[in-house]
Each structure stands twice: as structure tokens, then as C-alpha cells.
Image (cartoon, rainbow, N blue to C red; front, side, top):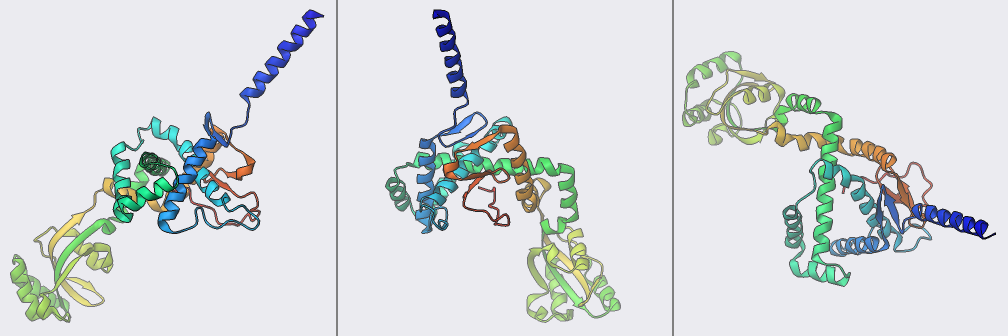
Length: 330
């Protein structure tokens, strides 16, 4: 009898231990990391601070019959989930934002809204500047993960190909030109100005160019992205080096002879962020969906329903499958 009772006690203890290991998180769990009530309260307070400074409702307007605090809780919890979803990748790939970067971001906010109003807003919600710095660090880290994941999924070769095809979008030129009506006139002008200095070129433009205003401007076009010009002109001006003069170029306006004053080309490495951005949301959301399946995500139903594609929480009252999907961008 004693042995049977002992065996029963052991089985119950094992069952309780097993249940404890499978206990539900206070708020949410991503992989092995939990979002606690304290984490959520701090995140909500910070969301309120930012909303207060902008003069907008925190998280937006509540749905019909929904508690007023629900949108802010969902927004704050979504921010926590997104951070936990990307944190491991950031640590593995050395993408964690530095304290200096976070400080720069918060200092920018202080410049925008004022140090005193920001300090008062933080105090009113019971959070500190250090809490805001941590939020800034997390946001910057998730942005870095988003960019890195997108580049990884698209591939560097594809991005470089896109760069080469659109290099005129990344080329800024400062040019002067002389516009005439015929090819013969353009050839005569070219023979006259080839080897000319800018001052000599502009003097010819003042007396020869048919462009309205050339008499005063000397044919100066100023600085512009090369792709803003018609294709033939854009290709010709981008092919020049500063101080060079083009052979005659035909466009719908007539014939041009171009003097390049200056040219600045954004390098591939500098242009990558701009190339990545149009595809970043779709690629990052696809990665987050895979990440959610890999890590496993639990959200206490009282806060809403987890949406893997954006690592966000939506209202359980929302039943519209066509409802606008929130962005996964912080």
C-alpha cells in the first residue's frame, strides 16, 4: 500500500513537472523567450509616450465593443514579438545596433520635439530615457535585419544587375548645353567648342543656342539626376567626365552639344538600401512567416491573434480576410 501511494505521488509529481514545462507564457512566447506582463507594460508605456508626442491615439482607434487600451496593447506586443523574431538572426550576423546609434536616434527625437517635452512625456508614463534608448536600439536592429534578410533572399548578383540597369538613377550630373536645330549646325558648334573651357563654352551658348534663356544662362542646366533627362541626352551626359564635351546628340528638341561640369555616381554599396527597399516588405514578411514556424510563437488569446507574416497581433474581432495587412517594418 505504501509503495502504491509512493508510486502515485511520483506520477503526479512528474505530471506536474511536465505541465510546468509546458506552461503558457504570461503574455507571449517566441521560441524560448517570453514576453512578460512587465515587458508589455513597459512597451505600452513607451508606445503611449510616442503617441502623446504625436498627438495621436496609441495604436489607433479601438474596434466596436473593444476596450480602449486594446489597440495600444496590440501595437506594443507586436513590437515585442517582432524584436524577438529578429533578435537571434541579428546576434548571429552581428547586426545588433550599438548604444551610440541608439543615442543618435533618441537625440534626433529630442531635437524634433524638445528635450523637456520628451522628458515630461516619459515621466508621465513611468518610463525612462534608458527605456527609450533600448526601444531605439531594438528598432534599429530590426531594420538592419530587414535589410540583411532582403539582400540575402534577393541575392547580391541580382541587386548588382538592377544597379547597372538603373545606374542613371544613381548618377547626378551638372551640365551646360548648346541647342541648335540641325545636325549640320551641331557639327559646326562642336568643332567650335571642342577643347573649350567652361567659360568659352557658355559664351558660345549665349550667342548660338536656341534654348529660351540661354543668352543669360549660358546653357547651364544645373545639377540633376541623369535619368531625369530624355534617354539619348541622359546616356550622353552620363558617359562624359568633368570637363569633356560631347559630340552632337539628337532629341525631340533638336541637337545638343553638352559640356559636363561635374558628375557624382552613388556606388553600388551606397545604393543597395535604395535598391532593396521596394522589395523589402514582401521579402521580410516571407522570412518572418518561416521564422514563426521555425521558432514557434504563442500569444495569450486575451491580447489577440498572432499573424505570422508580420509577427504582429490582430484583434480577434477582425474576421475580414481582406483587411489591410500591417507592415512588418518598425
